Length: 169
Image (tube, rainbow, N blue to C red; front, side, top):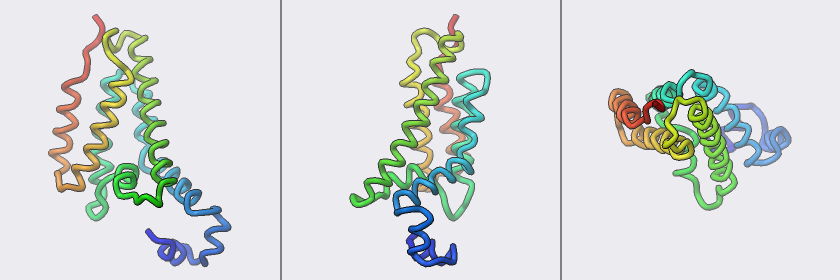
């Protein structure tokens, strides 16, 4: 969305938009925070589920739902923004990278807790599991843009879950 679209939608002139947000980067960070609040609430929901596999399943299946929610706007702001960003949009790209890193850290911490509680075997690698879930969610966002159906993406999520490590035992 261009500034002219934003100013028209908000009914304000460009100086008022800058006065409200400071600059393009600050405006984008606000939009990203709003997106996270509105569309990624399933992440904190997942983190309180009783098992690591339930956490992973919730994240993967809800990612499919998010990415296929709107027929005319498929994909994810974070993934699409990083892939489509130009060289002069480096601050936006960095904001998206930071957001992704925070999400991955939260998953890693949850999987570390699962391991300490005996839900994951000692041989499991919580950081790798968090990166794995993030890689699959990003792949889902890319594949939906390539025309994959919701059904196929749910099957992909299920296939990823089949690789989940079993309980310590």
